[in-house]
Amino acid sequence: MEASRQLEPRLTLEDLRPRTPEKRRFSDRFMPRRNSYILFDPAKCTGCGTCEMICSTRNVAKVAPASASVKVLTDERLGKNFAVLCQHCRRPLCLEACPTRAIEKGDDGIVRINDLFCVDCGLCTMACPEAAPLKDPGTGDIHKCDLCEGDPLCVQHCPEGALTYTRGKAFRWIKAARWGVQALSFLFLVILVVGTFCYFRAGTVELSCPTGTLQNIASSGTLILVGASSALALLILTVLFGRVFCGWVCPFGFVLDLVDKIVPKRIGWPKFLKSRMAKYGILGGAVGSSAALGYQAFCTVCPIGTLCRSYGVTSFMQSAELAIVPALAATELAERRSWCRYLCPVGATLGIASLLRLLKIVIGARKCKKFSCIQCAEVCPVGIINADELREGISPKIPMTECIMCLRCVDRCPYDAAKIRFRWQKSTPGEANT
Amino acid sequence: MKPRRDKIEEAKKLSGAPGCVECGRCVAACPMAEMYADFGIEMSPRGIIKKTLVGDDVVEDRNIWYCTECNSGTDVCPQGVSCRDLIRRLREAAIEENVVDNAKRCRACGRFFLAVPVEDFVLGRLKAEPPNVLEALETCPSCRREIYLLRNA
View: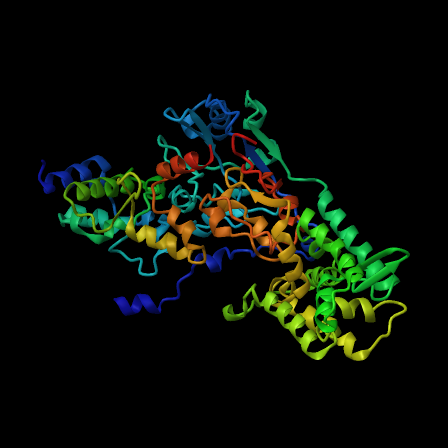
C-alpha cells in the first residue's frame, strides 16, 4: 500500500500553476519601480474605526467592521491607536506560505489574494509578521488589503487624514543631484585636468589628496605647511558633512557606481576577508612604506590616482597604470564598493577626519515599516545599515566613519524614516519631539 | 469534567459527521494534499471522520493536528458535514484533556493558536527568512498586532 502510493506520479501545484518568478527588468537598476503604499500616521488616528467600516463595504457589501481588511487597535492604557493593514511587502511572507498559491504580487507591487484559489486556511495570517491578513471571525473568510486597486476607500474617508496613499517620490532629486555631481567631478578630475585629485593648483588655490600629503610628509620627513594646508580643504569638508567626497566626488567611486549598474549577480566575499579596519592598516602601510622608501609607493598603484593620471585626454596612458582601475573595479562583482568598504586608505583618512563630523544619518524605526521594506539596507553601497535591527524595531546605529553620505537611504525611504540630522540631535524620525 | 467519549460524541453530532457518505470531495478540496508529502487517508478529513464514526480514540491521534481549519471541505460537502468543526472540537477536547504535544502556545499570551505540523509547514516555506522575522511568528496573530502597536504607535 505504502509503496504503490509512492510510485504513482503525483501532480503538484508546481505542475498545474507554476509560480512565475518576479520579472526583473534591466531598467529597474536605473529607475526602480514605484510601488503604492498606504501610509499611516498613529499621531493623527483617533481610533474611530471609519476605515474598518468603509473597507468592509467593499469586502462584503455591508457595514461589518469584522469583515474589513484593516484593523484598528486601541490601547486604552497608553491612549494609543493603530491601524494594522497590509504593507504590500517587497518579499511577502504570506505569498511563500500560501499552500494553494492564491496570493500573488502583481507587477504594480500590489499583493492580492486570488479568491478562486483561496481556501481561507489562514496560513497567510500565521506567516505575516504583522498578522495583516485578517480572518473574519464570523464567516472565516480571509480579507486582505488590495489598495482598492489604486484608490483606497479608507484613505478617502479617514476623517483625521491619518491614512495617506502614496506612490513614493516621483522625482528623486538627491539621486539626480548625486549623479550630476559625480559626473561633473569625474569630468573635471579625470578628463579635463590631469592628476587633479592628487594635486591641484590654480593661482593661489592649492588642493591635494590628504593621504598623499600624509605620505609626502612621511617620505620627506619634513612638514610642508603649504602642502598640509592644501590637504585641509578636503578634511574640513569631511568634518562639516561627513565623507561626502567618497559618495559624491571621488572619480573612482563614480566608476564603481557605474560598474555596479551592470553587475549581473554579486558573489560576496568570504567572511574572513571582510574587515573594515583593513583600510586603516593599508593607510598605515602606505605611510610607513613612504617613510621607508623615500617616495610615495602607494600612490603609484592608487586607483583614484591612476584613474586621474592615466585616463584623461591629455594623460600619460601608461599601460601598467591603465590596468589598475579595471582590476579593482572587478571587485564590484563580489560586493558593492568593496574597495571603499575594506581597502581605500583615502577613505580611511577621511574616516578619521569624520570622527569630528557635524552630521549624521538616522533611521527612525518607528516610522519604518520593518519587515516589508528594508530598502535602505539594500541600497546602501557600503552595507552599514543593520536590517536585523530594523526588523526588531530598533533604530539602527549607523557608523558614520563608514558612511559615505551618498544619501541613497534618505532618497529611497518611502516612509521618510531616514533623515539627515545634526550630530547632537537625539531624536529619530517618528518620535514625539521631532 | 465530561468523559472523553462524550466529547467525541458531541463533536461528531455537532459537525454532522454521521451524514458522511464517503464521497471524498473534502479530500479533493483539502489543501493539506499540497502541504504534506505524506498526505494520506489517515490525516485526510474523510479519514478522520471515519475514525470518529467507528469510535477510535481520535483525541490522542496526531492526525487531527495537520488541519489548517480552512473551510474548503465543508464548502464542497454534499451532506453538509463540517470537517473543520469536527477537527476543531476534537482539538479543543484534546487541549482540555491535556494532550497538547502538537499544539503551539503563543509566547505572549500563552493561548494555543496553531498546530505544530502546520507551523512546521509554514516555517519550512519561510526557511530563507532571517531568524528575527521568524521570531515574530511565535506569537498568536492578535498578540502580534498588539506588539506592533506598542512598537509603532
